[in-house]
Image (cartoon, rainbow, N blue to C red):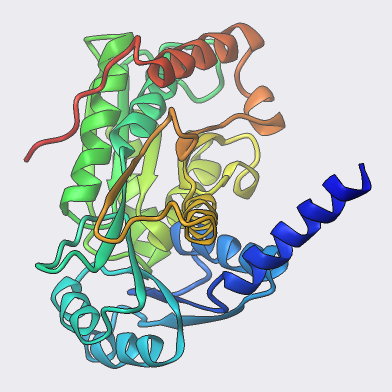
Length: 329
């Protein structure tokens, strides 16, 4: 038994010594969104605790003039660079070619280079959004709930009109109509990711048009959607992180995109030598990378029978019994 324990300790020590020691997290936006970027940051902090690595977060604050120098700074310092590269995909490819021995992991979109240096984590976000649509459709039919009208209208507020947000909307509409083909879905793209006031304005507009539930897909801008739901006595669905506690009684659930867990998964693969450069890692409900946050806040809004139905549908998506075709623009 002592030999087995010693061997296990030795193996862990060897893996720790072999693991890259410096990890950078380069994001096009900034931390503090309580959503997508913060989810990734939680994974970075977990890496520090689990592996004792040094980490740096480089925030570009949506400033194009910072994209190239931020990547260069990260490349010169880190062994592994996790990148959220919306808007600077070409800069990423250019700098990755200059530092091909580094490990480059692009998150949430696919970036491919001619030499296969960059790997990508590509979420099947339409699966999680499908489940959000299921919840929204069930809720808008529950006229016994305070704030629900009989019109069967739901909404979504997107931060920008891009392929990722279109994928969310596509899945959301599909999930809603899986429950009720007569559901109306109204969508507003506000064109910004960091302006809660614009998110709130868009949400108030949709609520005024009869929407009972709004899915926010807008990072920090979407916080305004949650505020609007609380203000007018309506409902919202959060995104990326668990935002249910941010407006108690009004955020039914959140469509999780587990960026932090994905970062941990990829780093674990790097450590155990199963990581492949240039590979696209497709992650969805089956892998536990997307799905719904169902907690005590959810249970204060929805009865257990409804929650059981939603969980059953989520399990069917995970098993493949319910198939959700990817969004194709």
